Amino acid sequence: MSRTVDTTAVEALAAAVRERVEARAAELEAQGRTLELEDVEELAERMVAALPTVHPLDEPLAPFYDTAGLVAWLGISRQALFDRVRRGTVLAARTSDGHLVYPSLQFGRNGQVRPGVQDAVGIFTRAGVDGWTVGAWLTTPSEVFEGHSAVDYLVVHRSSAAAVAHVAEAAAADAARWAA
Image (tube, one colour):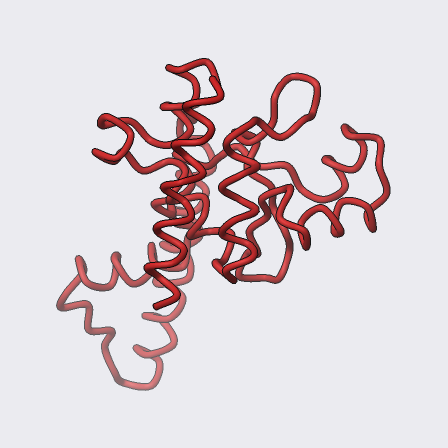
């Protein structure tokens, strides 16, 4: 889903920055100094660097459930959810601020983890692979899956027993290779 930029907020930010830069220039002038803004583009880049960024995994893995939302939807306790994560029956990824998020792509309409996805998550969890890596593996197109991602391969093949087995075999091969 594409979001447009709130132009009012951008204009307010630009005005606030202008106000602060002008105030700083006035302070420096009062000291007999001048404000040097030689590389305006570099300064703009440094300022924009403080804004939230798009992570390469946001698009293929998002949207995410947070713990409270998933617990409510599934009608289970937090402990039951954490137990599923620990056992590798639900994929979770830890954010930089320590929270767990759960990619929605793993769930069917009834809240069950999709066949094949659950198999791969379990294999990788037992091998100690982190959630972000598992998510990337599930969503990255591969020749192993006829140019599809593992998730799309399962969709194309309607999660047939053969497709589920193929995904599980590929996950086990990669997990073994990564552990070596």
